[in-house]
Length: 208
Image (cartoon, rainbow, N blue to C red; front, side):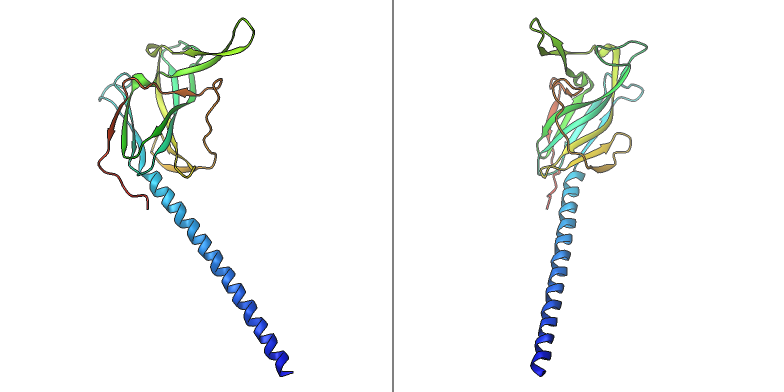
């Protein structure tokens, strides 16, 4: 009888120990997840953008700046709003349209200065050739007929997480939808490289 009681007690202790170990493992996993999320956000917080222009003017002398102060590269793009000046239509654009403008990889500790002239996007639209097959055609809208504004700035970090900064207040949010390159027949654009300046940043933080 005593042996049975001792055995039962032993089983109880074992079960309790297993339960405690499982809970400790869960807590450690949850803590690790939180730490990883905090580390990712620290990296994301070091990647920013802003616009500058001369007081009293907006448009021709406007520049967009993208700064990557982290120690890892980031894949960046802009959500751009195009508005036709006056009552004109611009190429394939409506009087107001929003599309993705891809820059690509921004190296660590790097500042990009993108002039407004580079925001004239090289777009792809389908046409039919003699064989009735679709082929890409380059469209370069007339910058004298429209102006651009940045709706928001997005980038993907080295862990594959997609982040977005608001064009109004710069708020950083994690985008649950991963960024995907739009195909060549979509409304995706690639920012022109002409006139873009690249310079190193002295202040770069650790991502640890």
